[in-house]
Length: 332
Ligand SMILES: CC(C)(COP(=O)([O-])OP(=O)([O-])OC[C@H]1O[C@@H](n2cnc3c(N)ncnc32)[C@H](O)[C@@H]1OP(=O)([O-])[O-])[C@@H](O)C(=O)NCCC(=O)NCCSC(=O)C[C@@](C)(O)CC(=O)[O-]
Image (cartoon, rainbow, N blue to C red; front, side, top):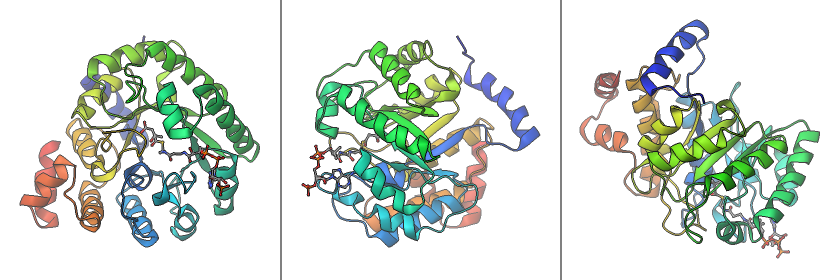
């Protein structure tokens, strides 16, 4: 089993990044989709687009930009076509979109997409609430989407939600998640993002899950997607990184939640993640100051305090760019 302590892992990675300037950890930003989908007040398209621009200008290379789910289910995401048509696409940036079925895929295809994400659940209760069908039926539908996308030359990413617990069914067995991981990879997904949708996981349950999942695949095919509802996001992340995973999902300012997962709050905040990685000397190629500005932009628009501890600390006490740079350097 591939397992190193985190400092050991990054001493190893540091050498790699100096040689080829590649980020040691790939940050997959979900704020514009997972982050905003739960907001009750409609966020205008131009604000979504500007948020995406601010994130890419901070150096984020993967931004999940929209979803093409039924507007009857999630109205907030009903402007996916306009969002995708209005973003200024940067070279080298990936703008995946979330797709629930072939109908959503056909709509998204109008927008020059290159990557889609499919999202079966790890539990029956959540599958019924979120997708209105069983896990088995959802996998069948997502396979149709994946087959079509692959035929069209697109990349396909898979999520599995509720991997560490379900708001309706309670505990979810690691073996079940390992089996679904295998099915999702068999559809042709290049990676599977393991979603702790309601944030109930702990470092212990993450370890148990990773051991089981790595019986069916390798760490380069796994991403970690932790909601921070119980404040366990970073420690769960450390537990996952120890198994060699290199892709982490996060959400600007810790925005988010799922409309069909009672009590779920936002993802691990991207600012907190980047600060944490700075401190380990990990190369992310992300400008923390610009990221903080992106977080403040959307929090100000939503008129609510940021959920990022780093953004709150720096935002409250340090008002100018130089001050923020000085204090952020303490992380290294
Ligand atoms: C899967 C369905 C569509 C089934 O929903 P359904 O009601 O069973 O579907 P339906 O086929 O009966 O369609 C109902 C209506 O929606 C329309 N419709 C149907 N599909 C589409 C579409 N794609 N785009 C536009 N319209 C669509 C369809 O045409 C019809 O319209 P009508 O004939 O009544 O006028 C629905 O349950 C759905 O959209 N679910 C998605 C819910 C969602 O977005 N949840 C949040 C994302 S998942 C998540 O957050 C977890 C994740 C990924 O982040 C990981 C983690 O955090 O752990």
